[in-house]
Amino acid sequence: MIVRQLEPDEWTLARAVRLDALREAPPGMFGSSFDLACRWSEQQWRQWMHGGVLFVAETTDGIAVGSVGGMIEDDLPVVVSMWVSPGHRGTGLSDRLLAAVVDWAITGRHHEIRLWALEDNDIARAFYRRNGFTNTGKRKRCIDWPDRFEIEMSRVLTISPPQLPDELVAAASADDTVRQVIDAELRLLDPAVRASPQASAMLLAPSFIEFGASGRRWDRDSIIAALAAEPPTTTAATQIRGQLLSPDLAHVTYIAERDGQKSLRSSLWRRTDDGWRMYFHRGTPVADKSLSGTTDCVDG
Image (tube, rainbow, N blue to C red; front, side, top):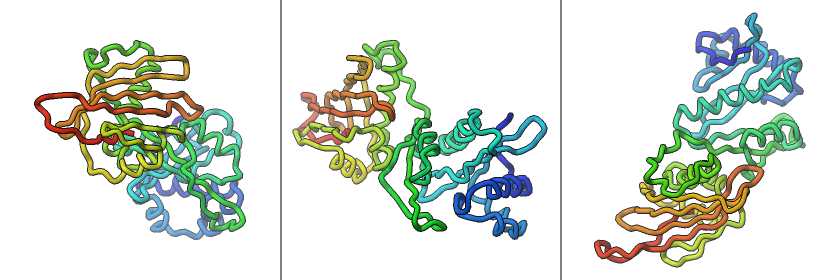
């Protein structure tokens, strides 16, 4: 079994796999119908493939048994048209297809990917949760089934996490778990993540609290709003240390420098079903005679 991306001129294969999915799926599942798609012209199929990407899963004899698409909406990649033929469900093929479109989003340097799933489709929602997606809180009525709802799910993407020199990770354990927490901490310093309320929310616990360098107290909602509103700024992190306090609790410390201001940073992270989430952060200004004054640094 191989999973590959279709080329623009393979519209006939795209048509075949799409019709297979529409024929087998309940009405309204894909926002279209088999009868309508059967009447599409070549130009319509080419247009359907334009501006996005389509991956297919093929058997060794070239039979397409699954597909998934990706498209850009509001500057963010969205998973669409996930389908696996009944005879190949439960084989791990869905995971491979989803991984292909996630890799496509990462290659495009996106920090987040979204999708819509039927609210009452527990199997699909569990599948996406297992693959790192969580609810964003958005909900809408289905176009073809007004008495049913779809919920939006989102996943934060890790894009080439920084390879930190050993001297910067001064006291980090060799345990990969510590590295995971440090990578999550560094993602919160990424301007693209900070600018996206959905992306930053994926890394913060609902009960998150921060004491900023100015002494201000932030909760999760206020810090997310502040991060989204701040101008893009690079924050340098040095002397990063990580330590597991228990299997599900980690402590990270480092020195942050932004706009000429330095502060000592300390974060506590908890492991949840959806991954590591920061639940406490503190910033303390560093006394430095070469710097005048201090400013509050938003680090949530």
